[in-house]
Length: 76
Image 1: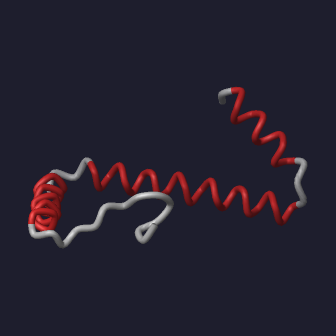
Image 2: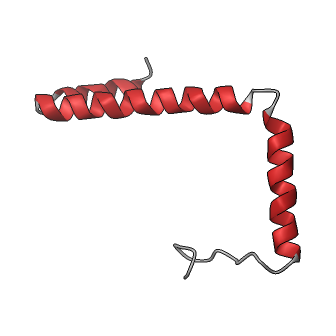
């Protein structure tokens, strides 16, 4: 285990039990989500789908249907 993770675990261990449970749950959810994304991105069916979505997005840009995102949100 790297030092930064050890330090984080030591600090988490100082929290009340309910907070420790929430931290553990958040970590597990993040690890699970990362694994799901890795599986999805390494699936051989993914590149054609992404290429199709990219082409659709570029068509929307060419047709003037896309808006530039600036600032902190879509409408800023």
